[in-house]
Image (tube, rainbow, N blue to C red):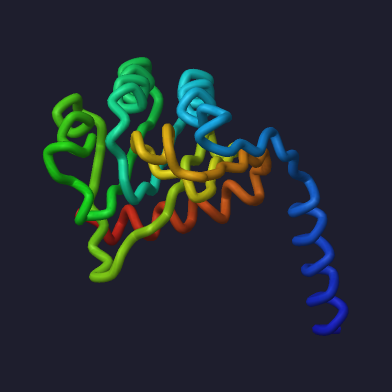
Length: 163
């Protein structure tokens, strides 16, 4: 019966979604979100995939380059309007890290880091000094291969459309 099968599929999807842990919720400027990002970059074993609107924090670039140099699959998609000299696009590219510029004619406004296909870090926080020191920003860190899979699909879609 198609209806029963559809309901069983929905139950299966819900069970997968329930298999998650919230590893942290942080707010800037008081929680120093950059330190949380560095912690997860340093812990990555297989992959770090990033969709980011604004990225000007030098220390994050240094840590991503270190991860790349130790064999982690690091890929970053930048909002194309945010790849000027003061942004980290050129630094990462010059170090060999695969980077791309989003081709969406509107803004690619994501702020997402996916670690090892199981950790998702997302929220309003851009990787810039203003977000770190002044703005009221946030991130949530989620451990779920199901949720990470959804974000990976979106990352791959945007990566494949980018240049």
